Length: 110
Length: 110
Length: 141
Length: 141
Ligand SMILES: Nc1ncnc2c1ncn2[C@@H]1O[C@H](COP(=O)(O)OP(=O)(O)O)[C@@H](O)[C@H]1O
Ligand SMILES: Nc1ncnc2c1ncn2[C@@H]1O[C@H](COP(=O)(O)OP(=O)(O)O)[C@@H](O)[C@H]1O
Image (cartoon, rainbow over all chains, first blue to last red; front, side, top):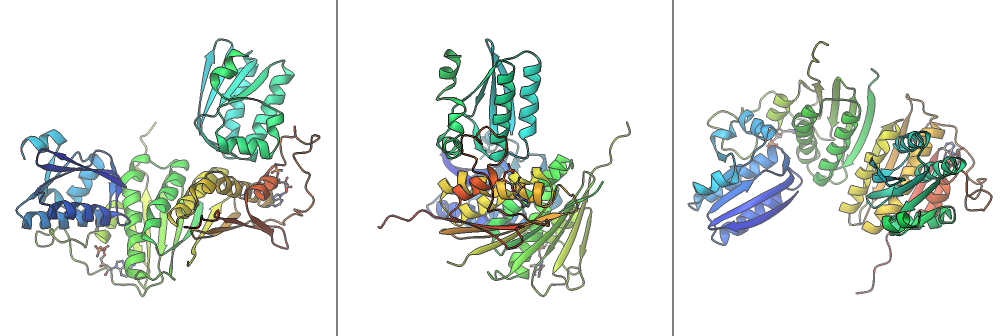
């Protein structure tokens, strides 16, 4: 995995390339928490270039979402392919996250 | 490995992408022999996108070169990176092949 | 079809998981197994089992290994993951999809394995899991 | 540095070689071993040993396996490849670089292993080869 962090207006946009799994989830977590400490409140994780996510990766998303909400912020997700969408539906995490179809959709309504 | 065969004037140019090794060398051999049977005589194998070559891959090149020469043709090689050049030097196969630095160099003098 | 068998013994290193899974997926693809099922079901299922073996079974102990036995054909993949731990009781896990559990950080690994694989079995001790994934039925010609 | 140990048991299938080599290379990279030596020396050396084990040791027999034991640190990679064959005498091979041999199709495998690896040893029977590759000396800080 590698990820790319950009600011788009007041939204911190993170692209996850490759897998978000037990072997690398800490990197994503650390990066987002740094931004949160630095004052960022609106986060969008874009999965357009993501292969698969395991339960540890899902766990990190849940944990981050909680921490961001505690600071009055919000975490949104975008661009889940069919496989990833299945994963969120199976675990019912689709009821917990704001999942946008595209990055633009997520950004315009933020 | 995958490879791509093109005609450039009367030269059959083959790009080898990935590895040329024991697991796939037959594919290259078969393809070139088909072209040879179809009447092609000038062959250029371009290694710009090649990772590594093992002794089986080198063996296929030697075998093809021989077969092409028997039909009055010629096999040239181009774009060996430093690693591949080392391989040809170690085995002294650099004395057996016409090795051009670039595709153009190989083509203009053919 | 004769199954092709592999054995992998991996050190207790979470970073080895992705490439080990990739290796097994590439062998299954080569054997002709359905690409769609390899993408999510196979990769996530095996990743979960390896992570649990390293984290809970071997408890991060660097001197312990995880052993993977895999057998693949175009129709069926069978993967067994065994750790050197004392095992656990897989029957009594909370359902992570219940509203009360949904916001938990953990507890989705075995659940996902059960959802993504066609057959899942633990050995008596609970330190080895065997997972089977079947190819989708082919359309009649 | 504690070495990280892997075991792979592969079926006698030449198409499994590339991904097995890739897997081991990725582990060595992760351990911090020199990328430059992984690119050619490691990959070609291990490929040759695996190909010989499958082709000559196991003579293509689908019921035989090849076992790979690898141990990696940032400083040193050690790979042992063992087949289920009767072995051979590695001492009496023709030098493929002699003018009389250069145009031969085969005979460069063991030669390349010896050139690309730092230490090469066969067991008594000749059906197991152990190869060591050392990292280049680091510059004094
Ligand atoms: N191989 C194993 N050895 C021992 N305990 C295990 C093993 N696999 C799973 N467990 C236990 O089962 C629990 C549930 O695992 P899982 O569903 O993967 O969720 P999580 O990993 O998020 O806790 C773990 O917390 C652990 O206690
Ligand atoms: N694992 C092995 N078991 C039995 N014989 C082997 C083994 N490895 C190599 N050999 C023998 O050594 C010879 C030389 O091998 P090598 O140098 O790799 O060249 P090539 O594979 O092109 O013949 C082989 O032809 C084979 O007879």
